[in-house]
Structures are given as structure tokens and as C-alpha cells.
Image (cartoon, rainbow, N blue to C red):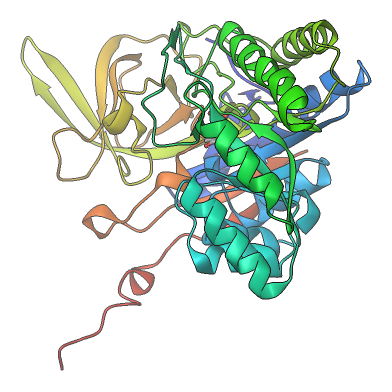
Length: 434
Ligand SMILES: *Cc1c(COP(=O)(O)O)cnc(C)c1O
């Protein structure tokens, strides 16, 4: 048994998060319920920031808000002095509505629409990460129309794809994102961008994958890009002020996962970029990173009410909860693995192995396979750990199941930050035939 952050067991023998009893949370706010440990999110943010500050490196730590984008979360990112990545008009709208400082917003995406680019320019956001030639030309056209300048980074694909336990070197990366670094696309894009008077090229960006445990992929990517920075300085007199190495830092979902602490990813990246820039006599650029999952993932816990069960003799026992792929699609989508306990008796010894099913009409709607658990029934609350990233943000209304509420807990207090959807909400956009 292990817990993250402020999660533990209180004197009632119940799971406690941020000093608040998990069972009381379900009584106040219902189930399923997303609960976030605010202190842990602050700690994660500060961990990344401190790692740069300790070495006096100019940096921006941008929260990749697609992991969990709500007004309260964006305000928390603001409080912690983070920057913010958005990947759509909707995420940008949320950030602006939350009052996030626009100069610290970065806009990503491989198919930003004219409307979205105009929205970004009208809001004078800090930087647009340009992904492809179509966007480069479109952005230039809009800037000319509006006589508006904008900072950009060019997203490049360095030919490195990182996965949880390994990374793949591909000469020419087969990816829908970015300008290829090896085949000359990136250089051509840079030449064009330098030629466009309203575009200010701050530097280069790459993002090599997600849930990465090793540092090697980041270091290799840095190496490939800094080599090109040297070429482009000589050839085009271009000096990158910013090197953005993206996000993808792994977290521990289960005992099998062994991520590095944020400080280790950061210090190894700094060390490598220092060595490389000294080797090529380049100015040390600002280093930007974009953690999403690693800022919010392990701070989130989903609480479910246990319901029906089904025994398949000699095969397995299914235990169903009152949510599923509508609030957490990651097991169905990526075979993602989670740990869970009964929130009302987290220390009881498991005496059976069960598989946790959702309530959606799909056989694939399973949350956890083969989970050791004490015998559980309708009075029990199941707490699934590490659901803070890509849970709520990928939630959906399949089977017309309303989205759960979200609460933030900190110092013994709970704050509702997203209301539970109602049945009326579900039919709000339906137009009757008569
Ligand atoms: C998704 C994404 C991130 C964040 O990835 P995590 O795995 O959540 O850290 C960062 N940068 C870009 C460009 C992304 O698309």
C-alpha cells in the first residue's frame, strides 16, 4: 500500500485526501467524484520550477492544460507562476476566462483554424507554436491583415519517439506533428518565418512522447536540435532564444512504474544543453518544458460507489462501479493500469481478486483487471488513484451519463470546482422535431 501527497488514512479508518475524509466527500458531492489534492499539485509545480531556479537557468514551466483544463486548475497554475499551453480555441477561451496572464499562454496544435489563430492574436498571447507550412502562411496572412506581430516557436520533429520504457530513433519521423528536422523542412520553414516581418521566431520546440521514464530521449532530442541551431546560426544568422523540449514526464500509476523525480529530468536536460551549447559556442537558450500529466496525474483520485457484481465460476469476479469509460477512457483507449482501494476500509487485507467494470454498454468498459480487494458490496466506495490527468479532460457522455463533479481539497477544506452535470444538461442542445 502506498499513497501520494496528502493522501492517508484518518482516525475513522477512512481514506483521507488533503485533510478531508473521502467518505464525507462522497456524502456531500455524490459519486463518481474526481478529487484533487491541491498541495500535491503545488508541490509538483514547485519541483519543476525549483530545479531551474537552483541552477539559475532562464526557463518557463508551461502546464499543458489539455491534461485537465478547468477555470480553477488554470487559476492554480497562475498562482504557482506556471506558463500555460493550450491546443484549441476552447482551451484558450478557458484560460482567458480564468484570467490567466495572456503573455504566458502558448498555443499548440497541428490544425489551428483561422478563427483560433485570430483569437490568439486578438488576445495577444505569448507565443504560437507553428506546426506546419499551411499554418505558417495562414498566420502570416492574418498578421498582415491585422498588422499584428506575434512570437512563434517552430515545432520540429527530431526523429526521436519516446515511449514509457524505451525510445525509438527514426530517420524521418512518421508523425502528424511538426517540421522534419532531418529532411530540410525545418530549415525551409525557418527561412520563411525569418522572412515574414510580423513573425518573431523565438526558437524551437519539440515534444517526443508521453509517460516517459528515461531521460535519454530528451537528451537526444536536445542534441539533434542544438546541432541544427549551430548550422542555422552560421547559415541564416539565426540564434534561438528559446529551446522548448515539451512534456511527457512519466508518473507512477502502479508499482511497476518507476518515473524519475522532476528535478532529475530537469537537471539532466540543463546539463546536456549546457554542454552542447558550449561545444558549439552558442548562447545558452531559455529552456521551456511543458509537463501535463506529471503536474496533475497523481494528485487526482476518483471515488465510485460499488454496485453489482458477477461471478464467472473458475474465471473471474466482476465488480461494477457507477462510472467507467465515460469518466476514465484511458484503460479502454490505452490499456492504462491503475491501483485502487476501498475508501471506507483502505487498510483491510485483500481476500479476493476482482475486475472493476464500468456501467457503460461496452464489454471493453473495464477500469481495472485483477485487483486484489477485500470483499466489497453496495456500501463500499472504491478509490482509484492517479486519475488526475486525461480523466476529466477526456470524459464524455456515452450512454448519456452525466459528467461527475470535481472537488479540490486542501488543508482540511473541500471546494467544488466543477459542478456535476444534470440530466437537463444532457438534453440542453437537443432540438425536438415538434
Ligand atoms: C500533450 C502535450 C504535452 C503534455 O504531455 P504530458 O505527457 O501530459 O506531460 C506537452 N506538450 C505538447 C506539445 C503536448 O502535445
